[in-house]
Image (cartoon, rainbow, N blue to C red):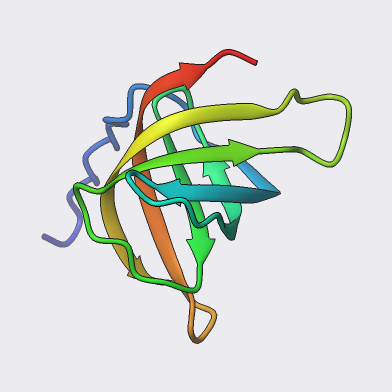
Length: 105
């Protein structure tokens, strides 16, 4: 309604998202083919990456991020896809995943 103050925004995420642009490699559980994408953002509990394929929610993936700098170490983790939506770039999709476990190097 007009003139009424907007309610305060409440952040429901448990972890802050950090925008990045690192190459990512991933494998769908049970498959040997390694695929590529670009990490868009990451948090302590999830990841968003861009790829050229649709990956259905519920699928398990093993991901590997190797940053192109020495400030961040490589990360290998198991994730579960929670959603896949069209990306702004034609022919690409954003895949959001919940991190289920981090693999030690």
